[in-house]
Length: 219
Figure 1: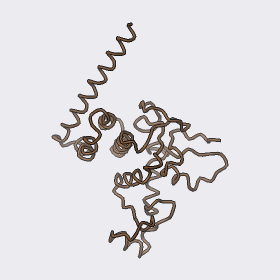
Figure 2: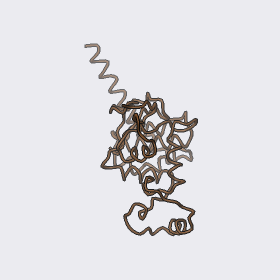
Figure 3: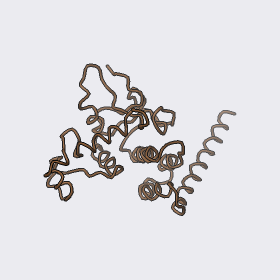
Figure 4: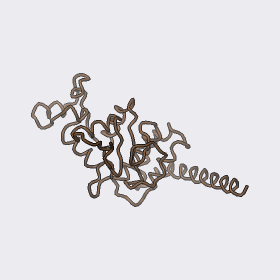
């Protein structure tokens, strides 16, 4: 009986905290802080999610003990999680709820891109970094972006098939920013024994393998 009452009180407290946090997030636009920038970026997507599903994004916005870049990446992943574009997983790739107890920035253990929504994930990740995704490099048709066309013609921009429509330099930026290198976000594709690592980042972006915080080789 006591356990049940305690659980009910805890849930009520969590609900109140989530509601207060959501209201607080909606007021951030009145300030001139980093939170204002985050609110403006995610306000429309949060409204589409609704108060309940947007709580994880609100919590990510409130995170203080990380760099601006990592905070933004945490917010984006939290929003993609709420939207169902990705699902959270543990260090071995098994699906599990996000609890904020992982070793990567923001408490992530890992995540898996939903295969059917991998193009949406790639597009969102490109938008997050302010980078162009070339439809011509993907075989989707002629690219109408002038800078992309000029860069491709001059050789300044180099597109490889494994980079999913992003130029070579941008793809390297994506992999390094997410990686477990020092001062990076802390997630890499889960490796498997006896395989080449050349295409594992591509496969992770396509939802064919998870990103994890402690990459132990899988059998």
